[in-house]
Length: 249
Image 1 (cartoon, helix red, strand yellow):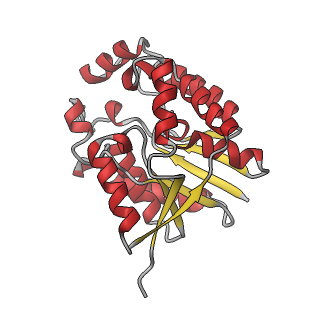
Image 2 (cartoon, rainbow, N blue to C red; image 1 turned 180 degrees about the horizontal axis):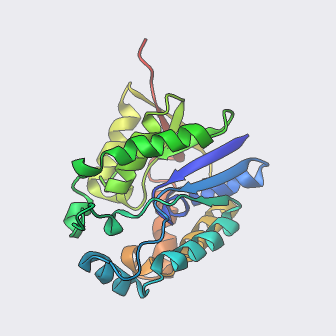
């Protein structure tokens, strides 16, 4: 079976599903990671927020290229084939008049700007054209309300095909994320499928997350902390889970 995991950014699948991806690939499945917001921004026209984040990541103007290189290493570790779409990360997007849509970290988690709502339709149309009919598509739940996760989830929802959803890590470990997942476990509107992650898969998950050297310090104290937290996340609701909405007839 072909599995296609939709990743808003150059790290979301390895962070959220790395162990599952490795186990699937190791058991003969064809696994692809389609990263949506992987396009190169103009080198000489970055917002103050983007410049600040590049500085925090220890990256220069070629930050996206470096992050794609990190992602290729991570995908190789977990046995997935990467594919990169040309949409820009929200920190780079701006209006035709040159105004940046998201000028603070608060903006990034404040919902998709209505002026770029057409991105959802554009992305959905592209996915509709390019997704194989027999693929199992796994999309982000959008926990954390990051605008790029929201865009990816809403575009996937418009496809009119059965979807499975993963919990966006690390947002799913935060208080609101835990509450959402615990509610979904009890809700009659959602069903979940459990996956036992092998010890080898867990090790590959951690190694893949560590491949994003520019991002480690954003979410973890160090590599040891990264490993401990991912191990904890892999079982904090029991076995690793994917969700799907129950259709009402």
